Length: 268
Image 1 (cartoon, rainbow, N blue to C red):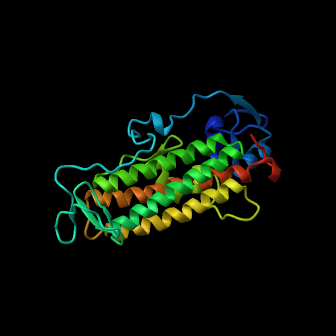
Image 2 (image 1 turned 30 degrees about the vertical axis):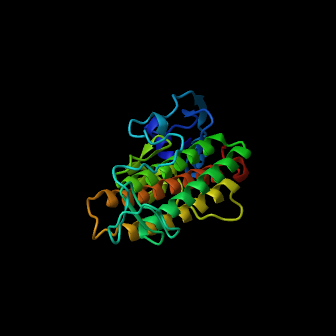
Image 3 (image 1 turned 90 degrees about the vertical axis):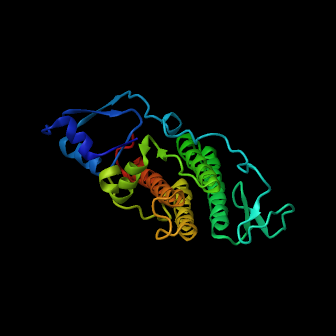
């Protein structure tokens, strides 16, 4: 958990030298918060707080379930999306577009589906690495991102609006706002990854790059000018919010790194 200077100031109203401030056990102070503590020689006391609601507890996070193969045949034999002819035997160059149609594998929606599949694989790989580094907290976040990739795959396949994204107890709009105002959200400016940053930050930054490519694929599959207010447009919008969530995870790791003992700060 990250504690910012503004959160400390809210406890004190008017700072006094040697005053006591309470912070959650295990929290990390941002650099600005560390300076504030040093300036006023504040005494930090740990407090136990109730865990933030996880995405699995969020009422809109029914999508966080184990993976399963999404293809479901419905009604008659699926038809070719181009010519409308029923496809009883699928040629190698076509694939299932949705429960009713087949399409060639170069179709924009199939390209998007492939990018989402790859992104999910990266999330799982990064999460596995987080577990190896004894960071189950980060692994849990990455597992959530992988689950949301599956939700986007299902939503695109069935051409429905995706479920609402949630990460680290924050909803999609809050994550989006934090990605544009990291100083206000986590107490640091925009993250600029460098060689000296922890390995997990680089894994998450790689995911950030990957999800930007997925967003381009989503906009190609569902151009905004052709899909305003449609289920396809909702999928593209959800990918944008996924991008914000991945970047927020990068910001959390960057703030933790800058506030750690290695920087001479107060690591909590």
